[in-house]
Image 1 (cartoon, helix red, strand yellow):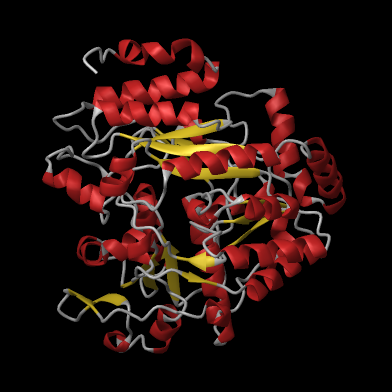
Image 2 (image 1 turned 180 degrees about the horizontal axis):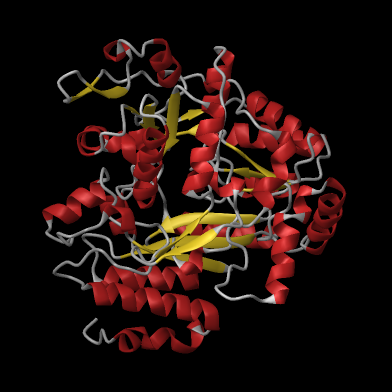
Length: 502
């Protein structure tokens, strides 16, 4: 990761926690090792790669493997930016014990299964898509992997083979709740790389001691959490501690062309019932959780389910805060739903608008969103008391300077309190990637491990815009956000960008 990404809070690895529960239910002895929370204080600058490595060292990982003596090591690789670490951990497992079977899974391995097995001999299997059933089945059939659906494996001749897809798990209520070690709940309140510095600084050293040592002492951490939460009670974007994550659905009803989520989840959107979600919330509140992060790509797709969950939280008088970092499904929102969400503890609303040109949104991004309706919902949310944030993307294949300007204007004219501006990254497996490739808009030397959601590096240039154009408007948007000077300069935007011909 880059230096400006240091000092972040890790999310619970829900995918691995669900797999832990599935394997434990079959009697397997399981250990979950999260490198970020095991050693959040460790930060090393890798000069050769020009990135910072946070979390467990190679020695830490090898030590864990030697202590646990696993037959199988399963590694999660959710993002292309994690590719090098994904391959590196596989090599460490084989280096520690060559008899260990290494299984990979997650978003990008699911899209690149054959290539991974061809390029990296450390991997023996790749789980394709959801692993709740595929991984337990694999452990039952290690000698005959061809019988396991949803799997890529290396045959005796060294060639990669892929079995038939596994049908989606339609009833998510049948899955056991994700495993959690509640004794380590506060580990996810420890910033990774917090106040990291090359040189000694007393103030930073004291802060690091509080985060990495004192938060492990029950009396100190309870006092710290009480003061921390009280100080942030009126700050909608502040995160309470301890916090935990919930996944109440899988997949997405949208088919946005920049996203591969619907491919990973088989193109099927499924929701847990309100009763199932509330059972998990009850458990978390009982164990002292003060903020619940619902990490669904779209939580509010079902209006009735949203209201049922919120009403139960209100009726039970839970003193918690809710957050939904990926945003909400705008078509299902109205004032009543917003009021229930606010009363249940949600204070910060994120809207994934993406683009300010309706035709481009409909025909190229193909997102189910009406910009006028979104503007109405944003205004209602502001009236209720929410802090509203919008997500917007610049540099899409098929865009023009004009559509990018419309996006910038929408972001600052739709009464949002804040916005987050992204530069499109052409993730393989997405339609946007294919579009860009067919247009010749991608650099031939594209490094997939450098594709990050939060980046200032444009990857696409077309006949209608250059990479410098994308960089300019992204920089200007963030500059306006910082200075709050949109009204002063709104008539000069083309001039400021050097786009006088628009």
